[in-house]
Length: 462
Image 1 (cartoon, rainbow, N blue to C red):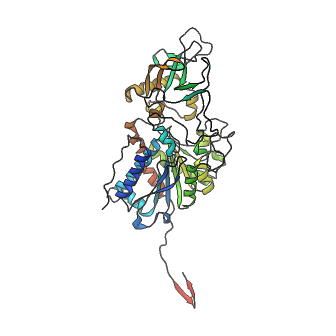
Image 2 (cartoon, rainbow, N blue to C red):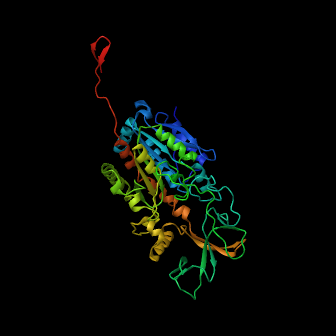
Image 3 (cartoon, helix red, strand yellow):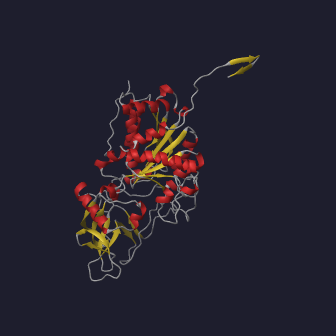
């Protein structure tokens, strides 16, 4: 007899062992709908799980058009895993029901398959969820150098509170000062400004070989970005940071590439990331005017459906989401679309700016420069909606190299990169309707009628 359907917690980020147990609990509860397979091993040897969801009574997954959904290719973007789990739970819990929503799921799983990979990067996620975490970009493999830094500051949790914040150090030459309306908020010192009380803002961490005067902040030793390791428009390290020594050099990426290429029934894909509260469509490497018009129109049509379901705006990566005007961002979306001809979207979940009432249509540019009034709005949002936890009050700490410092500022992991626990389910709930509509829009070949007629000895017309 099948086991009871598990009840996941969407306010909780699961570690790898917990996630594994939860996924297999779904398979045990609904063996007619759910199976769990390993598509490969991570750098540290963890299984990368794909959850295959389809009604086996109507056929195998490989014989049906399929939607690919993944999340958490970037280490600290844990809400992406939550969103995949939410969709899995919706599919399994609604199937067999009689409501209008259940009828959609019934049609979906009877005629389509869904491949869900909640966590493409289990090693990086495990590091982000450690008791004393580190927030790297992707894989835990050292790259491009294997040596530990011999000097400088390494970013880490030094006071053991499970967060990585900012250190505030009084310094007459510092580049920051307290905002007059709220001294918790640090703002940039004006050019040529003198006579005030100033501070340095330094990432939380310890310093090696400190000479008592200057030091550098070390980049993460784990410098890979798995989303730059795909074959389409791959470029070397000096052109695109974190791309790895060659395309699909990283086991996590190779596992995904192998699985998708071995499943040509996949016609559309969505990859969940954080953050910005926006749906991104191809291309990452060229403008809309250089796309095939018919493809562009199709992307625009389905992107509009995504906007309708989620409330997130849908934009082009190249036109509206480049980190720098001279940069070209390649990733999973370009490989799936350009090499395989399948539709692909990236969803950047969660926007703290929107929660704070900041109207912003230039997602990347805002981080480069924005009015201080926006920071005050965010601080108010922290106080009123997050119990003051998004911005942590400055707390004295005796640093072994710097002496007396204060630790505080924005808790970016838990309130910027990811929504607070009470809002994670709300963000995840924006997307099941769109994902189901995407999957149901995939073409399905069906033989309506078959006839076999004898034309002569050993000759037939089918």
